[in-house]
Image (cartoon, rainbow, N blue to C red; front, side, top):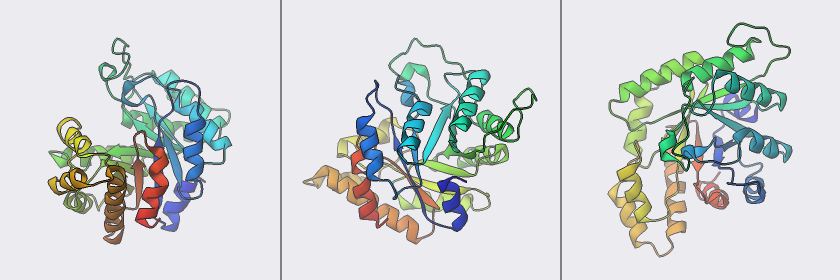
Length: 291
């Protein structure tokens, strides 16, 4: 059983963090950052060609992290592979005894560094969850028996600040039916959004992990407000970042405060930290949050 699943079943406050493979083959910095949180997190998410940008694969990086004694979370998107390749990727994860899988549809290729690449989208996030569940039952999508089967703990993503929110809730229900047992949210910065989302999804049988992105500057906050769907950074946080002498420390402090409040109010079952290129700061966020 995966550490993440064990944590949720014990009723622990689960912690995962996200790490992006490099553009290249040098994984030394990623491994260093991952080892710095070893024993403090229940899983390390490895992005799958995040923002449609060429990197080392999630599967290869997950294997390296597992060999280093960490619990990986494999991300699988439907953008770049057809159903044969996705099933092969999942079976390969099973060979490596990688249990945690996060299913994503994937950003469009035009947003990345190979805009001329042809997207596939044979399967979306719901279909990937269904496929992973089917493989775990011992068969492939065509009903063929497997000689040995993987054992997956499946997750998906959700955006708490979305209009209409009912659309996100319907998608969550479909993902749960397809096999999702936990959700990682888009980054949330205001407590009212989280309160409203938790209230409207309390009937769902799945664990909720609050997405945390530490701010680096007021400019970053403004950029996300303008360009990243589902993200809203309140004006008071932008002012705090603008007036702070040490922007990075202030962003870490804001994240820690928000985690503490969300945990104290019981608004999530855990957190997922997305440091976006500053993974070395994850231990400081955990310190600030008292985790």
